[in-house]
Amino acid sequence: MTKGQFPTDQFQQLRTPFYYYDTELLRKTLQTINDEAGKHEGFVVHYAVKANANPQLLRIIRQAGLGADCVSGGEIEASIKAGFPASKIVFAGVGKSDWEINLGLDNDIFCFNVESIPELEVINDLATQKGKVARVAFRLNPNVGAHTHANITTGLAENKFGIAMRDMMSVIEEASQMEHVKVVGLHFHIGSQILDMGDFEALCNRVNELQSELERHRIIVEHINVGGGLGVDYQHPNRVPIPDFKAYFDTYAKKLRLRPGQTLHFELGRAVVAQCGSLLTRTLYIKKGAVKQFCIVDAGFTDLIRPALYQAYHKIENITSEEPAQTYDVVGPICESTDVFAKQIDLNGCRRGDLLAIRSAGAYGEIMASQYNCRSLPKGYTSDEI
Ligand SMILES: *Cc1c(COP(=O)(O)O)cnc(C)c1O
Image (cartoon, rainbow, N blue to C red; front, side):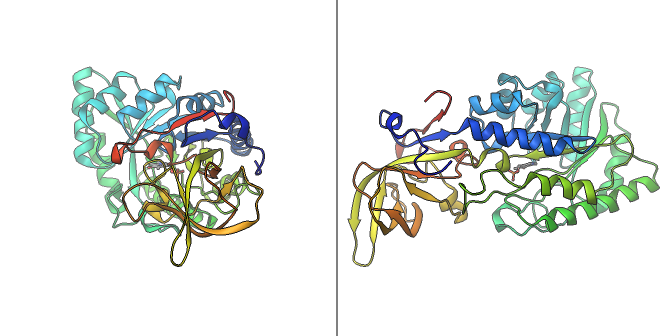
């Protein structure tokens, strides 16, 4: 979508700030995922619900046939409500509560991605009480770095996630003694916003090593789950609206050696939904400071926290101005100095009432909104309803 393609007339009726989702782009993105993953036998794609659980988006993603990767009981409930079959729901996370595990067991979800032995024991106990057998995959920490922001790397030995590789055989051994769990897979996830295919290659090499070790013990698991992490082009949402899924899936097809009958699962979040979403906000005031001018808008980090939390870049456009460009710091109304969306960027001349679109905000945007300062949560609208 380029500037000018937003339905600005319809936007005028809506209270800002709000999220706007281009469902045509979402559908095209999902089609590309299905086309590219479909070229490789045994590839199964899940959507990481934590990126955005907007019910309308979930329904579109479910209609495209993706499974759901959940990290809480609430996400399992949202996925079931959106129509995802339980047989396509996986449940990950370092700290699953009993009620969340019970919810997964009651719904017979596809798999629990288990991150520790104490967790495995609890799952086995709860499954015993229900007379069920829980399907589990072990999340291993592959000690593979990713060239991304330190706060969103997850696959290093120092991170809290997963089980150490050297413990792989002993945890599988321990699980085999338990009657109410069945080990069906291995799970990995090295981080997010990864654009260097070399990082995924490093993960493939690690998985190959671990599979060889398992093979020496005559173990072949049903599936390998390599998590998500594919990044998007935050600089150029118009030029690169759809991430390079071909390079991503081809890397795995080329580098990861699947055993006969094995399936390879993916859990993509950001790459599915980031580019279809924008945060729309209205200019309140233009304030000329001593050394710079500020464009003060009605959205704050309560609506989109990524710039404050990760120093993330989002492209911003003034979609209602044709004035010559000027340089601004775009800031929100929250009483914190970190409430800044961008510093020293060029925007078409801003006046009070102008609408700005903060682009590539579909992932980790609306879902991370808070009510700090007693603010209301932003609404989300899709292009289907506007
Ligand atoms: C967050 C997460 C994902 C999705 O990551 P993206 O970078 O949004 O693709 C997948 N799997 C697990 C286990 C996660 O925690």
